[in-house]
Image (cartoon, rainbow, N blue to C red; front, top):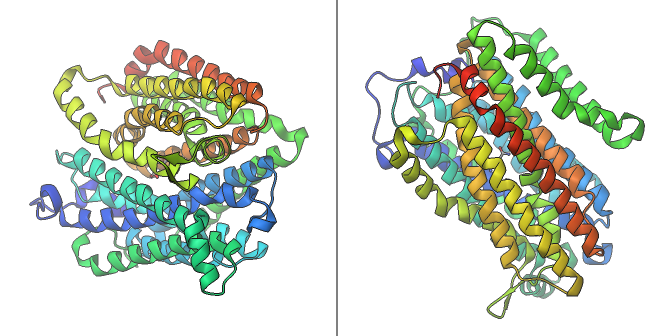
Length: 502
Ligand code: GLN
């Protein structure tokens, strides 16, 4: 996304001394991101549960609606701050320093959440969001800069990196969920003379330990990064004015979204999430310049991604609440913490990624085009929530089997693997050379808005009215089905817009 990630700065003789014949730097970035995501998903697994838990059980006793809004705003901010985060790395700090300082801020955030107070809660969330904005886009761009543009190992490198993300995301809820929710750990706390209702904060603290391990790994393996991620030359003037513009722009966007949340008179702003990309598609798509046409394709992918993440990112809210309140959290006689459901998606990613890698290679030229892969991604997403309709109906007669959620995550992961890794690689290829950073920003903005919508939707979750819950899922299935068909119909046009990019 920057001068630091320009593929042409890659070494002439490719380094293949890392894992699976990859550059040595990948081992560093893989492990650092594994631990960063350990923190992110470990904390996220608890966030909504902690907010809605009654005060006598150590929670904040927020309504589902409030918790959904805060969850959405938080996850939105995490991704939205990637835009200033990327800009700061590109023009001021360099990606390495951005990852390092981002990691420190994130760890401070989790340790702040470990304190039982409302001020600490909000401060912790702000710190984690700011730190992640610095770390996440820049660690991904460093992966890209390990390779030259033509390097055939590039896609495999990103897949290995995506596995790292999901190894962290798999492990974390198992640990933070046990600390926060299990009776066994509450007994241990009692034994130590500590308040067992504060167990949540031990979960948040564990997320901080994870991030700290990530930072240590990053520092110890720094030498492996070779040429990647250095600060821009000191004789280049720093664009302070532009930085101000980027920060103000992000602030205005944030304020608009908040306004649409809190003031019903401004609710219409949220339609902009869909209307603005459609206008951009039409505007760019009707230009004659091929690079403008490719921008139109980028906005098609971004719009599909917003819709995808709006459903998918309810994993930590809607699905988590369903798992906690309406599902038997017991398997083969063992009662497990409901946060463990958060590990299921990652387990599927880890198991299915090799299958997808094999499939794409096997299909070769017959593999679906990227807009078609996005369509398939949305299709599986619609199927996943379709499965929730009978599950929701069954809750009328008591707790349902945990396998419903396992099935939902299976279908969602099939969709995720058609969309998430494909999106980043396609978008970076489509981006005009001088706009790669901007296009990455658009991708993260799509994740950001999708996360926000996910929070808004989750606010409508109900655990006490089975037919209403079934209707809630059904409504979303219909929306995604409409989006899937619409995207399917424009696949040939999008392929044309993309020109020679596949
Ligand atoms: N699960 C992936 C990650 O954490 C992608 C999430 C996203 O882009 N919304 O990196």
